[in-house]
Length: 338
Ligand code: 6MZ
Image (cartoon, rainbow, N blue to C red; front, top):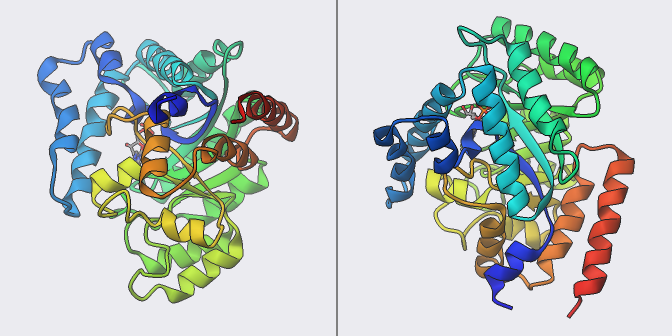
């Protein structure tokens, strides 16, 4: 079988997908986004030269999706579409993350409830869990208010809302550690965007905080200038990293797929999983990300199912749910060996 067909066929686990960054052009069209704005979605793929500005460019694109999902109905429809697209790509376990937004006719609570409703309606064909994000650009006061709402909604939907994330433009804002301590004490799992750009002091603070997972970790590897201490700490911490190949290449935080820092993690057998990040903005899919990994990192085809088996270990679902998915993956592996 053709390698890409195999990547599509294998049952997959996706742990790092921003909801609004995952809206495909088709979904945006359904949500009535004007054609000239849709063209912006192709811009990021046309930026051929690696420059740090690319990361900033991609942050401009989220505004298009945010304008398209500024009501209860549109965020609900968008979530349904995103889940369906991952399902069609044979993702069997999905962790979606999103930053609750208040709009003129929608509260943050209504935003979360609409996303949860779409997730609940998908439960017969795919397992989806929700991670709620705090944007690092927001002030302590705004973030504290968001956390209170997140904790309230977590109490209402404990089987769906499983974690909290720190995201947003890494060149701005800060990590309000106290809020994440509170979230952890309330039973939420923690994932932090960490080291997406060089910021050794913050990376150190985050690693010492010991989140359940980190996102990207692009600047945590042995060849990164001046970060020996970080690398040693990271290696001893065994924190799984959500790696996003295409996102890093297109944002210019790594030069090419084959030079991606995942190489170092593979060499040292560190825990990581491969993800899409923003499949709409970066025009990718879970299958394509696996294809890039196999083709550029000298991995065998068996990596495909083994990747799903290790990624499910890092998931925020309950142990019981994880066991069920693991059994399904093991069965698939047995039936498709050779
Ligand atoms: C950091 C990112 C990101 O939350 O509106 N986001 N944060 N690094 C990245 N790497 C490229 N990609 C996306 O989804 C869009 C939001 O996710 C965060 C940004 O804050 C963006 O506004 P939601 O569903």
